[in-house]
Amino acid sequence: MTVSVAGKRPELDPEGYLCQLTDWNPEVAQWLAEQEGIQLSDDHWTILYRLRDFYHTFELAPAMRPLTRYLRQHLPAEKTTSIHLMQLFGSSPAKMAAKLAGLPKPDNCL
Image (cartoon, rainbow, N blue to C red):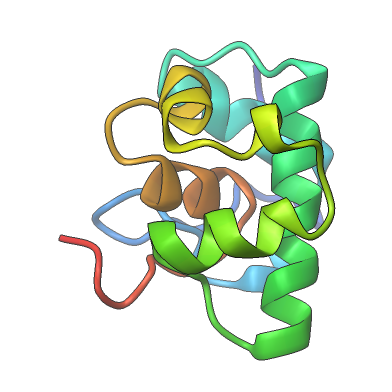
């Protein structure tokens, strides 16, 4: 899949995060997910959009604990557990979800 923003491929940092948050769109998210071997489902999209809402409200990408706490306010409990998020995004769900949502890497994630 070839993805472009304003006619060019979005620039990524060495860890694969978007350099410009404004480059994000659903096609870019799909492309980033493919790079990570993830097939995005409705559950993924729900989390990605909620994560973007969090970022726009608080101006930071949350680590796991604040992420699950925030999600519990908006989604059914079974969709907000660490286990469910790990099934969707792998062993570092806050990092991977932030990457796919076009956000910076959460500060306290290694």
